[in-house]
Image 1: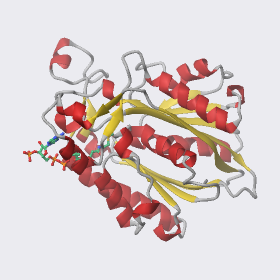
Image 2: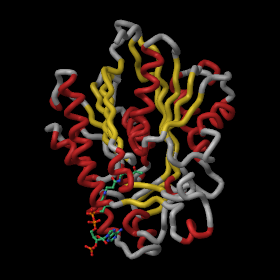
Image 3: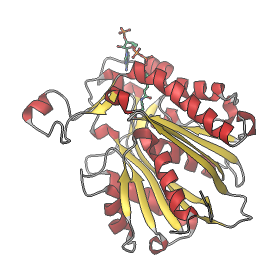
Length: 331
Ligand code: ACO
């Protein structure tokens, strides 16, 4: 495949709602404890959207943030890709709503559904368009408001999720640029789709009294089975992309894993023999924000001065589908 242009991450941004829900708050809602949540997940608190905030609102804040860091006007964008499973509406896409909010030109805008791996899928799609010279500047966002599809009676899931948005602007890099995306890798396995699913509200189980009574509009997850698959998928994905590019964990400056569970994060780092100090972790602050988790962690790490231009960074995720994937890039 001919690659005419290199692609780089020009700037990032993020946004989370103000309201915080702590483990202690959750103790009052379901039969759980701060100790259990910390020990089993690494989570301490998460940000929760209020009733007036939808995905496009958080996406807008994250996008403005990234555009500011990029010193770029919305009119300079050539395409918007949003990863979300909690869009404002079933249709139109959240990306189209954001295009209007930002005041962009009539550029293509669409959503991607790949669960927590969505940001990796989005980056991969955007990269192709820039590599071929088709577009110059693409806004990729991961945004989720999972707390609005959370079953607050199910302690196995309601303690896990938080809301947020993360954005990245990809642009064409010069041949001598030290910042560029090296490779991406994607995978999926629909055989285990039902392990993490929202059954109600689509064309299989349209909204009805029965569907609501059976809690189908809420997210359902077989956490234990997902856990084992996640450890394998994240580790495999990381190993495959490193091997494909003749690299090892030793070469990496940073790993930014999807923030679903601290034990999954450490297992992934262990698999590629990466010391914990090189892993970006913010699960304690935000919980699992699904496809927003990686871009939020990336933006925070850049802002905190951890990730610097030229650093070798790996993004690694898995999610509903099941899906998985990795991005290897020099920031
Ligand atoms: N508080 C207290 N006890 C709990 C809670 C809770 N919040 N939740 C479950 N338990 C109990 C269970 O009922 C069970 O009790 P039992 O032994 O009496 O039956 C016990 O704790 C152990 O339950 P497990 O489900 O085996 O606990 P596990 O160690 O697997 O942790 C968890 C559960 C945190 C959900 C874990 O399985 C996990 O993180 N799974 C992966 C989640 C994930 O990554 N999802 C994909 C991404 S999300 C997305 O794509 C939108």
